Amino acid sequence: MSVKVIDGSVLEGGGQILRLSVAFSCLLEQPILINKIRAGRSNPGLKPQHLAGIQLAKQMCNAVTNGDRQNSCELTFQPNTLKLGNFNLNVNSQTAASIPLMIQSALPVAIFSNHNSSITMKGGTDVSFAPSMDYVKNVLFPIYKLFGVHCEALINKRGFYPKGRGEVVLTVNPVTEYLKPVEIINFGGQPAIKGFVFISGPKHQNNKHNQIVQDISTAVKNKLNLSGYHKITIETEVGDSDGSGGSLVLVADTGTCLIGSSALYDMRKSTINSLTDEACDKLLLDLEVKSCIDPNALDNLIIFMALANGKSKVKCREITLHTKTAIYIAEQFTDAKFSIKQMEDGLNEIICEGIGLKTV
Image (cartoon, rainbow, N blue to C red; front, side, top):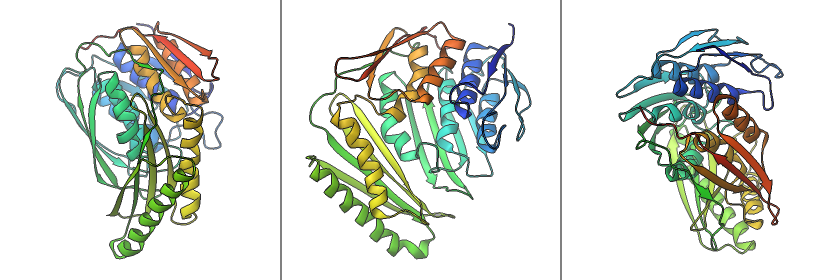
């Protein structure tokens, strides 16, 4: 099979092109050359974050690679047959590389194996410019389940910038023959909202952190109450970790949709109000227009829509550059066809006729 050349500078021009290209390469046994990697960034080329995801995919399909080193602007990835059996993998980024983004690389590959997989990842659980682990577990994983994807993530330890040192164990069950197409186009009823707030750091600061999470919980309830939402529950957690940090994730369940939002708590500059406002304002924006999925979740669904056996439809307020990039990469690798149309209510409906990739 001839090598497919992917321009790593198009559209979003960052790590998403790498993650999706490598996943498609594994699944379709398509050799690839990615050039101009992150060419438009102030620090172009591969970073530990990207190398960790590449390493996972490389192990999963016995790939031969060239250029998988720090700051490289070109990567050759030549997959062999996807490994059958249990993936018992371990990757340690030695940095605060985002574990949720490692999952973005590994999960689509693992579900098309023929046995359960266990993947241990070390790095950052809650870092900037990436989803938090609580968002992944409580927003993305339940939506993935609609496609027939069954996975769990155990957070053994939180990790933050710059040290990392977090640890997550991802377990994945293979899909039954095909991914199912989804329709997420009906908003549903008045949402029940669940919040997840945690602060983690040195143990001697636990009393201070307990007060912070309680104050965040109260602030979230007050703000959402003012907007007419009263069915709210908040789970709080205070943990021990090498570094210090935190996160707030909100999930609105309408009965037919899950809409999420999140914000990171930076111990150096965040306040109770800044964290609360960021997470609540994003959620309220989607609830106000009755979006069926939040913009940050949508780009994570594109690869599953492309691989599913049939037509998927998703309705969303905003089509982000990340989503456009994911669609572009999916169409580069597959015959999946995407269309986007604006509905009368002002929302966007994304339709995809998937290719029906079958498990090995």
